[in-house]
Length: 73
Image (cartoon, rainbow, N blue to C red; front, side, top):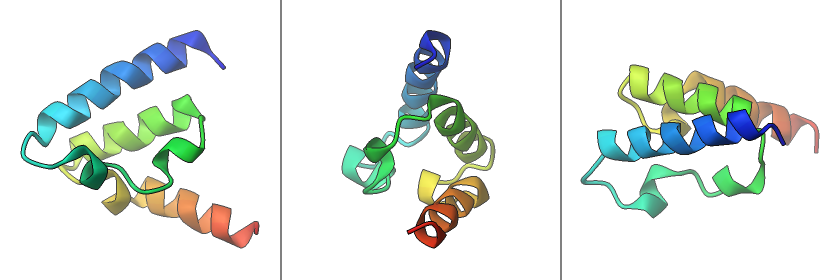
């Protein structure tokens, strides 16, 4: 794990939570969010969510990831 990617991920997560103060954490993150630890990709997804004022599961980048995971199983 790249330590810098993880540190940036923690900061991104804090920013994401701050953007959605009225939403419970279990609704903020998709069910499988913590099942993978590609923090660089997670940073990109959170950045997209914040930029577009969306939830993680609504972002195209997250949808692309899920489709990729499903097609490889």
